[in-house]
Image (cartoon, rainbow over all chains, first blue to last red; front, side, top):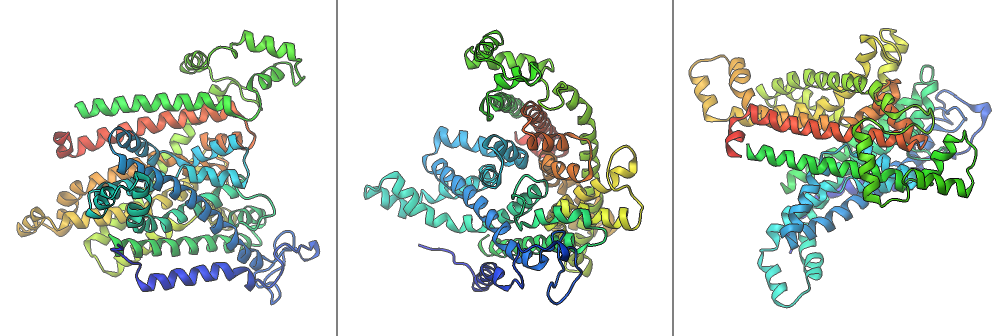
Length: 264
Length: 311
């Protein structure tokens, strides 16, 4: 029972992006962590296409290895958020009644709360660090998933296939996860690119402040923070990672718009 | 009216939730709060086990949690939020000093974003599909995808370090306010411009607009005088949402520009695990959030009589 399927060109875009993300470190001309103080702050050259940073590390290689830091962290954040939100949304929509009422009030509140502030507080309690910030950002971003899944579940549960499953004696859990969830999956997928954008911007911003990725990581926000001091004479240290974030986020938003147009 | 009363009730529940969460913060934080307090009072000397027990008994740490909460709430209501672990200043003093600075930045950022978004959105809606429309929407897409902290650095690099027009960072004069407001303003303007365009386009296809055109009114007069007021409701809702979430932007931008507001205080407190200060900031953010959302509700009822009557 799949009413919708992702259009072919979006598949292509997504596949290409995934392949590039996976392969990015293979394209790196140098070791990303190999440092040499005698080669610090070099300009652009054949050996170091984007020059070197304050520790003499190859900027381009670090950017490419960064594909396995920032987007991966963002994906983990979104996975946490989507799982929490989908389960709560299914529960709310399928069970209904008081639980539904209460959960939707909570969603309204969470949806408009300054999420990063709450995430920072949670991660301070958990003891900071990359793992803590990923869990916290995920834990404050679930509301949109819950709302969308809940609204669809309310209509799906009146469909004949659900009634049939119930008549056959399927347990509520089975109906919710095996029958309804696959049929609301398309709505979850549409949200993911926009969530990824938000997660990338938030995570790199916190890394910039020293609250996300740990020192030494080739996280893009952290690279910008490290390059800031030398920005005046070596603008590429700040420009390149920023353009990286910008293009990935624009790509994700465009993909999200396409998916939404297709399904809406 | 009853809907407004219901919202007020909901806000009170929210406020209770926020205070419980703030109170809980000092109980779930890593380390024993009582021990940290006593160590602080003894100028960094580690207290003995007996001294700690006595201190806990005297200051009510052994009382039931609801009682402790009520006592804390009474203190918080009168401004007693404890002292910072680091500066050892009262938290309330820090907050009072910094709140106006953040409010100033937030308001000027929203105004900046509207000054950018309305011309772009209206222009785009008047000639959909035109070059201006496509350019404006392109700007909006890029604006939405640009990391705030990066835009801030680019602004510094161009306007402060290269051209020397504006100060790099700090606080005090109007010039200090320009870059931070521009950074937050542009990041918010993208979404707003898109919404101005789409809601204006929707209203422009209504019958009464055709009537206005048929009467021979000027295009611009119809768009601004007749269509825009009816397109405002979703836009005001969005502005409210942006104000409610403003803290997320402020946290980063204040830190980048060294703006002495709540956001920077909060980041410093998180980095230094200064839990009394974190608690104070969370309380301020929570109360601001409730006030903002109530105000937006009232504003929408005031703008749109249909909402007023429907509820």
